[in-house]
Image (cartoon, rainbow over all chains, first blue to last red; front, side, top):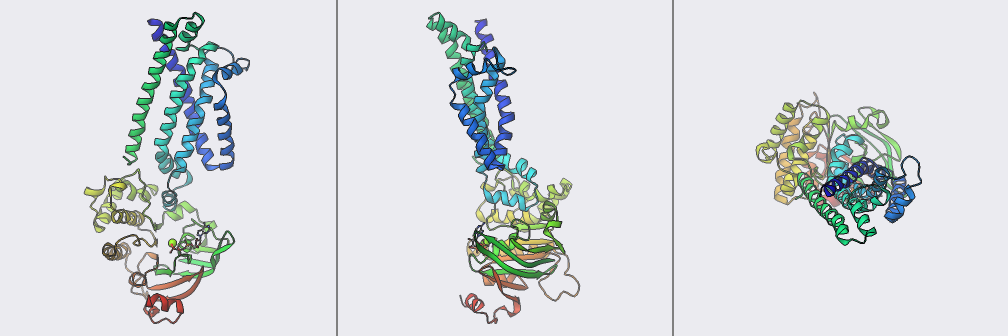
Length: 204
Length: 251
Ligand SMILES: Nc1ncnc2c1ncn2[C@@H]1O[C@H](COP(=O)(O)OP(=O)(O)OP(=O)(O)O)[C@@H](O)[C@H]1O
Ligand SMILES: [Mg+2]
């Protein structure tokens, strides 16, 4: 049992670290993609491609890489960041694009600088969409993180891989069920956060 | 003072504004009249730099746009758009407080001014201040947009058919409210001003409603296909012989 608690904790830790890094990189990237359509399109294309790499292959690719790669939790986090990036970049872009052109024009006409427009108007209005992206990224990362055990990343995948090699379905379930529950809980929690921001934005 | 020097705005090969030259004096109240697509909105947007001329130049207070720091200039220009375009995530009070906050007014002054102005527009702050725009009717939203544009006592006020979306009764009500508010926001007219309808505030009001134009402005400028075709004191408008004016008068 204490094994389960420790592995759940590990799982949550690598997912949290990865999602926080993905937010820190993804929101600015999405904002940039909105300002510079061409470069933004390219950035989006790259994250799109990354998303299609099968997760086991991704972990495999990371093993020989210096610095970021290898074995253990670090390359696992790197892979999770790469997967989480797309939904966050895309939802940031979509959220910013949905801001009413008239509202943007009003803000500019009243004398907001580009920066004030971004912080006072665009990002707050895009927040529910951004949170939706974070939710999708988190749920995806919780699932993908089970594969991270293949390269020694730890987490609930450890039980699953151990179960597979020992052909012990109870052990597999001991890893899989908590992982699924974590995903469901994260989804529910972040849906609430999304509603909260939508409400604050005066919409529901 | 606002001056257009041979201003053209060309988009996709079409001249939306075609060599417009105009001088609007400080404190003048001017109506831009014209049919749909005549270029009125565009003529307004070159004044606050939302649209840049393709040729010619526009001077505000004697300085060309390039010499102005645009955000700073815009904080002195009130702009009421055709749509209210309120910030949906901000309360009525926060919407109205936008420019004062950009100007870093003390919060008490912002609140006092908002209270005074919203009361004039029959939207008491105590009742409406904490509401979000979606909790207001169209006419109420439009009034908030007017308060938001006027609160910092701008030297120039640009209005783009602010009442066109309203029903006739509210519309008439809004026109007289607006009259009162603009008049109250301006100090006494400059000494020796020839027009009755002049205040400290320079007002440019876009409309395609003749009665509205004559009620609000001392001077009427008629646009057609991007050009200024008539520029006349309001008193002389009804008897002006230009065919477009005749059509407006007889419509
Ligand atoms: N960005 C743009 N690109 C191309 N054409 C434009 C652009 N903006 C305006 N136009 C065109 O320029 C013309 C004048 O537009 P404008 O909005 O200034 O007219 P308006 O007199 O305000 O009309 P309305 O009374 O219908 O509001 C229209 O034919 C419009 O389609
Ligand atoms: Mg227009």
